[in-house]
Amino acid sequence: MSERPRFLFVTCQIGAERAVKGELAREWPEFRPAFSRPGFLTFKLPENHHLYGDFDLRSVFARSYGFSLGTAQGDTVDTLARNAWEMVAGRSLQRIHVWQRDPGAPGESDDTASLIGNVEEARAAIRRHCPRADMLDADVDDPRQPVPCGEFVMDCILVDPERWCVGFHRAKAVPSQWPGGIMPLELPPQSVSRAWLKMEEALRWSEFPIAKGARWAEIGSAPGGSSQALLQRGMEVVGIDPAEMDAAVLAHPQFTHIRRRAIAVRRRQFRKIRWLAADMIVAPGCTLDAVEEIVTHREVNIRGLLLTLKLSDWKLADELPQYIARVRGWGYNVVSGRQLVHNRQEVCVAAQQQPFRRKPTSRRAGG
Image 1 (cartoon, helix red, strand yellow):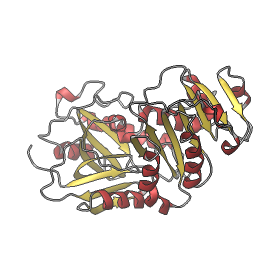
Image 2 (cartoon, rainbow, N blue to C red; image 1 turned 180 degrees about the horizontal axis):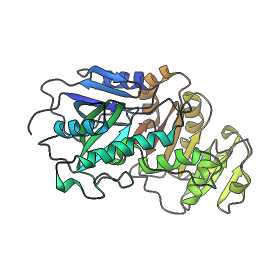
Image 3 (cartoon, rainbow, N blue to C red; image 1 turned 120 degrees about the vertical axis):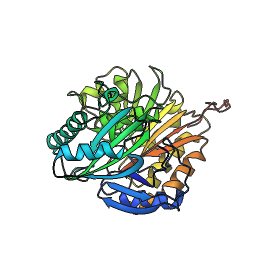
């Protein structure tokens, strides 16, 4: 089918809709907002656009996106499924992603069983009415398996009980390989906090080339969920936090706790550190100030960063390009941001220096 899609769909965290619209207004001023629901947006594309299925939207707050072919409507899942297949007829699609827009803002709704049930029912109906034998393999719509890069995916988003958005995208970066950009992570029973989920998702999304045994510093480490994620990957971790760490983390042989604020830690403590994470309950500028004092020191050679920036007000989303530019100014030439699935009103900024170059050594040690 040669017909060029006229609309784009975007899913995001509920509450981040304004931030998405602001980003697209800056990056794609020719896109026009169209139908929307909390956590789900569509945009009308210019008539003669030349966007490919794996184009980069350049959005921090878009959890997933793709071309929208319209909405399937019906009063039963079987009617919805049949209509969905009619909408993608003639397109060369190899996989199926089915998911539901978020039922509520983070922390407001935890009806996971109902959410999974809705999606499973929809997925079963789509398979039941699939007109193509080649798309009935067990792994075509398996949400536990990532889609290989380069394959085209049929997207089916449960927007309302009687309305599904139907579209497609081409798998590219890690988030686009999973339904709705949501990687299937489960919190291990021994984890001391849900920060484990944030760190694990950040590591998978960033795809940092980190070898086992790499040395990390984590600013704002208490009570230790993020540190656990790093330790479970075989890293050495220095946790920096004036608050108390969980006893299970303190007992790990590859963990060291410096019970101070980052500003009070001597810079010599960072000489062997190559990776740094920061997650502090302060304004983004304060987080960046603290990290800048460390990474720009002449005796410190940090290869990569994972920074959580808290957005106490959604208006701070407009400042994100300046925050990212500031990180680049420290010598990190590969910088990106994403509001992770397990972030709340915050974003993760991943930064690397590629290739990594250590600073010239000095005869005198810095404090």
